[in-house]
Structure formats: C-alpha cells, structure tokens
Image (tube, rainbow, N blue to C red; front, top):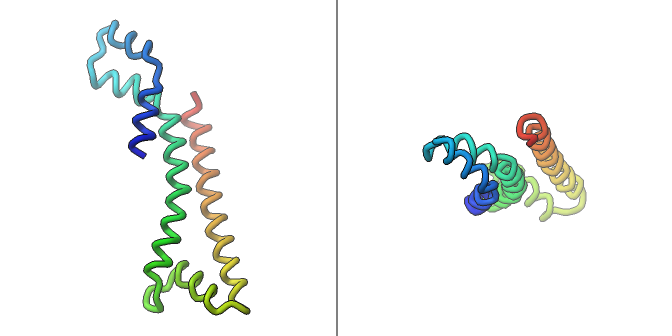
Length: 119
C-alpha cells in the first residue's frame, strides 16, 4: 500500500506543484491542496485492490485459527472440505457468501469513487 501511495503522489503533475509554489504555497498547503487531491483517485484504487487482497488473508487466517471453540468461516470451510459428501454444499455456500461480500465491497468502493473522487 505504501508503494502504491508513493507512486500515486509521484504521478501528480509537476506543473501543479510549481504553480502552487509560484503563488506562495508552503509545504503543508502543497500536500493538502495539490498532492493529496491529485493522488486521491489512484490512492482510492489502491485501497480497493488491497481490500480484495484482504479477503484472501481473512479466509487464510480463519482457516489457520479454526477449531471447534472458534467457530467461523474457516472452520466451516475446513470441516466441510475434510468431510466431503453432504458438506460440499456448505463449502460452496460459504465460498459464494465470501465472494458476494467481497464483490459488494468492491462495488461500494467504485460507487464512492464515482460519487466523490471523480476527477
């Protein structure tokens, strides 16, 4: 994420920074009024990509930490995969639920970007 944010700030047009300096902007004004607004669309896209990666790690952490005491998505996926037979429907059901939640999250991120960060 840090690398993506760094690249987003580096991709801001240098002329905007020069104009801000020419009209007397200080360092914080350049960051707040030039660099952040210029980089925000790319930063938002990076957050959306990281949210997709986050879902992978959530499922992985759930599987690693799964036990009967810690019931969760990972436990249901792991026991369903081990038992097979009638449990395969539960496994696919849980995978569909996770896919739907992650798709809805991505869709919400796109809506927010179109509504508030559309420049």
